[in-house]
Image 1 (cartoon, helix red, strand yellow):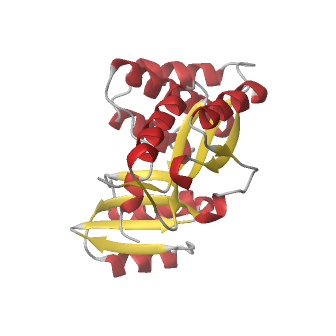
Image 2 (cartoon, rainbow, N blue to C red):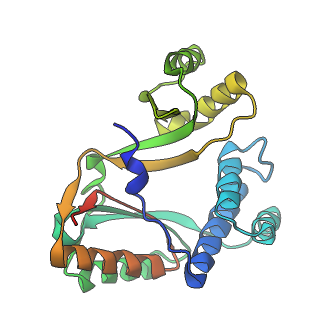
Length: 240
């Protein structure tokens, strides 16, 4: 499968506005993860992943601390996940993941992004079957057989292990995230993951060009401007 998935997730531009969006995204995700699974990163590996990734994205410590402090308190905001699927410009497949405290508002905001570029939002499950939902770990190494053996010994349901250019990529179902990360850490010690995330990997790509490509970039920009949108996954491959 290679590491093509790394180009299929929307990357935020490093502008001031985009940084604010990134801070908000991680603040919300950290709050929800800590609220649901506990504020101790050592006992909540999903939270630890978010904090580590936030630091890689240079999210300030006070943003992380504020989210954790808020999760420790009673009450607070009640964010729930919402996923929307559809067909973007050029017929590409798109998944939009959100965290929202108002489903009606969020649906209307996301639907407007689709309609403004003459794209079509679909029913739940419309395109998700065209993606593989996976936990992904990428780290330095070359002995993929050793990694696979350790994962299997830990009774991890492994989807794929690849070695390429001095990097090892491990793919497992999202439900195996904690088990897989624990096994890798026990085998390799304090490992630095280049990628440590749960994502959607397209099973095939959709080449787009010309006006479709322009509309697609506009589409992504509008989605990124939606406060409730956390992640956007797609199978578009823009042709030069």
